[in-house]
Image (cartoon, rainbow, N blue to C red; front, top):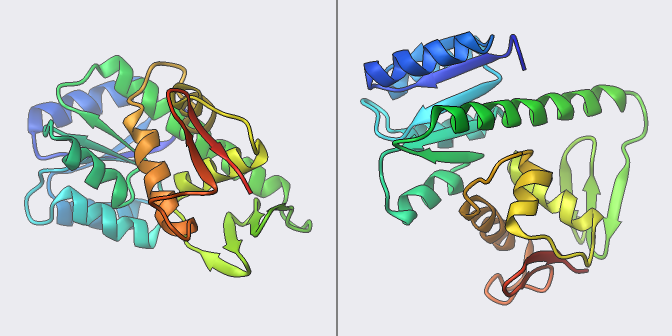
Length: 235
């Protein structure tokens, strides 16, 4: 949202300047860093609402910066990568990024993604404030208990650690148990994208979730793939 604080960690000065200009033009308060170590320091001191993080950085690479930030904060992280190998993009999501953008990218699309991520963060903050001081609503689906206020989940009474977007995806599918959603639909409903995004983002988050909540991730019984359509949640 306008006035939100965005941190850009990018060592390409030309791209950094372009991103800073466009974000400032949209009304954001922009922080910058040109290496991983400085990016971590700025994130800790500046407490941004969103981090745009390049993968190839001096001193500490973007993957490690993302790992460290994810241990310390729930700030949304968008990774920028010049790599075209799918495994490189998957790694970015698996270390805790909420989304990634592959260079070269459309500035219009990047700005749309920034707006969507900040919108979702603001919505989550408002929900938390609205429910403060009231008993935490708990969604019970089979062996799962989902605390929608504290963003916690347990399976059979055992807590499960999930990232911000993993939780959002699981909560949405659990609330709509049995319904099948396409990847594009999930990008719109969970990530808040009002444009065609990279559906691999959804696949990776589903894969990561399965490792955390399924007894046998290779043969999932809860997060089920409906071939040719999308995903659904079953008890």
